[in-house]
Length: 219
Image (cartoon, rainbow, N blue to C red; front, side, top):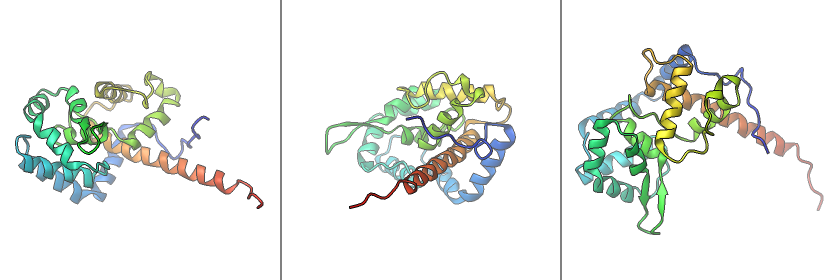
């Protein structure tokens, strides 16, 4: 079944004004969170200390809602790859997000891919190079792909395997909508997050209304 359509008079296509407005609103509502993470990553920029890494992992997971339960496994994984991570972040390599995302969980021996967390962990020290991916961003890009102007999203936003592909999507979005002048990935992140939240909320309301309209079954 196709996804329910969302009204375009509520969810907006990207414009410079909309991006700036979303960024200002996000910063007003999340000023303390933004300040806390800025100071934490500023104080501990490297990934060569177990305790510092764990603090950053717990903070990003809690404040940015990445829903990781095995935070110690994630912190250990980052520490084990710390030298490569620091080098890759300095070079702006998108592949390091894939490295951070793929974590083997000690309790199960299974690999889990934490792309939301990994993109956020890289975005904090290097926001100009690493746009954030999460379920809200995915929801918005899927919605945008259904619009005529979203035809540049050749690849399904819900079907990419490597972070570089997502980076290319957001880079192309910035170019297509003329957001390059003075608008970095971090500002665009906030717009995508806000609009994606609208998409998800409207879909939830649509599903709830469909459920309410279902006739009761006699027993």
